[in-house]
Image (tube, rainbow, N blue to C red):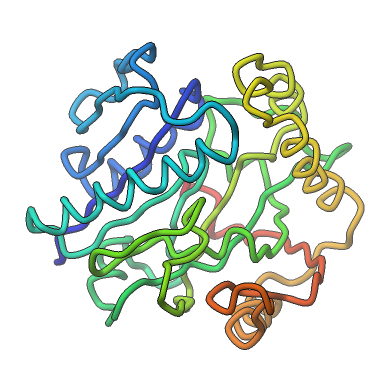
Length: 278
C-alpha cells in the first residue's frame, strides 16, 4: 500500500473540518493528515487530536491574495511531504472529499495504490446542492449523503487533487501548473460547500469572510441549490460517464490544462450505494 498524506488549510471552518478529519482519518490514518489553520488567532480544535495541525500567520487580506497564498503554501508543504517519504499527497479544501465508487469495494488507499499516476490524478467533480421542498436542513450528527442526493457534474470541482510528485498547484487545486490532468475512473470529488441554504445564509453574514470579498462569490455559488431544486435529476452512472469523457476531451481556450463541459448543467441523483461514505 502506498504511503498517502492528505492536507488542507482552514479558517473559521470547524463544521467542515470535523467531517474532513473523520473521513480522511478513517481512510488514511490521522497521523497522515496535515492541517494548517490560517491565522495564529485560530485555535487548534480538540477533534484534530492525532493529526498534524498547526496555526500559521494569516495569509492575504482579500479573496484573491488569500487563495493564491494558500495554494503556494500547500504546494510547498506537499513537496516537503514527498521529501519525507510520502508517495501520494491529496490536497483539498475542508468541504471536499475524494471518494471511490462503493461498487468497486475498495478503500481510497487501495484504489490509489493500484493506480499508475504520472504527475496528478483528478476525481470527477460533483457539486452538491439542496433540493428545496424535498431535503431539509443538514443534521450534523448524520452522514451528509443520507441527507443530500443531488449534485451537479461540475468542472470547477474536477480538480488535480492528487499529486504523485512535487508540483505547483494552481489556485484552489484546480490545476497543476505546466502539466495536463487525468480523470480517474470511478473516482469522485464531492463538494459540499453550497449544499445547505441555512448554512449558506449564515456564511453570508460572516464578517470575516465578507471583509475578504467572499460575499459575491458565495452568492454566485448559491445557484447550485437552484440547479438541484429546479433541474431534472439524471441517471448517475450514464451521465458521470459522459461527464468524464466530455471533460477529458474539452478544454477552455484560456486554460488548456483545465476541463470544460460546454456550460452544460447536468444534475444527477446519487445512488443509494453512496449513502454511508461521508
